[in-house]
Length: 394
Ligand code: PLP
Image 1 (spheres, rainbow, N blue to C red):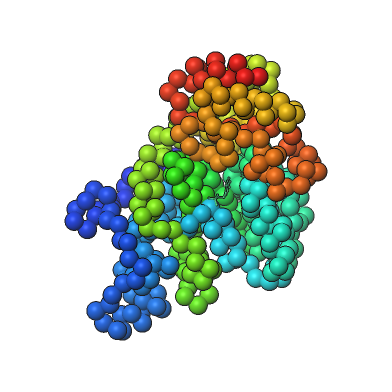
Image 2: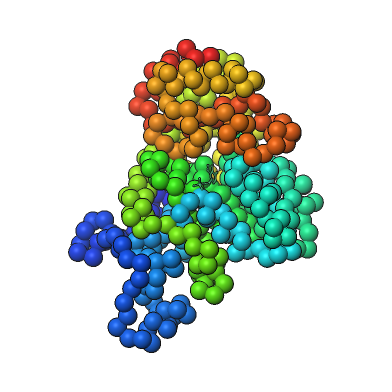
């Protein structure tokens, strides 16, 4: 069967500026005029096709980016947010009411974990954390009030792979929605095509790829996106995490080079993962045949974009990890910085940074070593040279 090709789907879109500009025009307006008062009323009720009301609801520039993301994901619609957390929290709060229950992977981005663990109890929403690869534990965690199953396609930072089709089946059987964070694997995996109901992104990472802003996105069917921006009940409309249209415009231009960047990130990451393995260093990379979920990822992924730009190596102790990262930064291999998806390599010690919200005993339980160094491998043209420099650091 021919696989979905997100890059080609994106390229089929025709988006022009209002004066024929090859890039869509930027609409930097908060509000919009109406020639007739009735049309304004219809727009309030979502019944005036092509009309814009107020930029917290919709902005034409945001719509261009949302449409492009929807094309890439194979969803009916999208909505762009001011950060990845804006996307994740809006989607979850739209799907859950007080008294509901969520099943979530324990290995998620630390901010997501903190939101689920520390923030949602305020609303009497209960969360059961599970190992995402343990489908039986997901089945066992289901309750009559389970509304959301939440996971990351490739988990942060342990790079476990979620079996999206099987999770989708579990969710459908109990009338819950499967929400998937695809931040680590845009284009590589298309979760909606595999059965996810809602796909969320931190566009701060690979999608934008420039580390010059934070941004997020939610992709789903029309009903869900419309529910998010309903003027009376929509979480996005009422909490207001909207993306600035000037940013939308720059992210849209970067989106069109995403397929080329993902291939290069993946190529470089695979090279480093194989070299680290040969050196006898413990490596986690889902593109290695020795990775537990290698076959699973192969069955889920689209063609051509590789296994992603993220790798993790285990240097056992925090001290060794710190010294290694400082030496790498001194040699200009990349930056000791959180975040990912940048053109330069970024590295951080997950346990003491992006996963520090997860208590240490739970980090150990989920298999996160104190010496884990997470790499977001950059777009280096000569990765062999980079590896020779890395070798001097451990
Ligand atoms: N999801 C993942 C997998 C992340 O790594 C991050 C941030 O690091 C987020 C979500 C949150 O995104 P943002 O920082 O854009 O709010």
